[in-house]
Length: 108
Image (tube, rainbow, N blue to C red; front, side, top):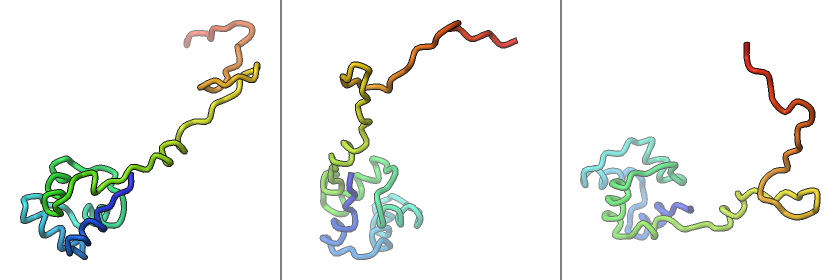
């Protein structure tokens, strides 16, 4: 997901994170300076639904206005399909069989 907080804030005339932080505090949501900095400068690793709700109310937007899907990043994270001995594709890595005694000894 791409986080668009700065763009949405700029569209509403909010140019500094401190200003948005003050508006959040006035709405009853206290955000630390560090957390606000993370929201403002990049994609937050987490965000509470209550916080998202207040941000949307202040910026007069919806969560989909703040987040843009990036399906190409999802596709890039998928594991590549491995080839089997027959040359056919398989979803998991090839595991070679164990020969001899297939069981390990129990701990003493």
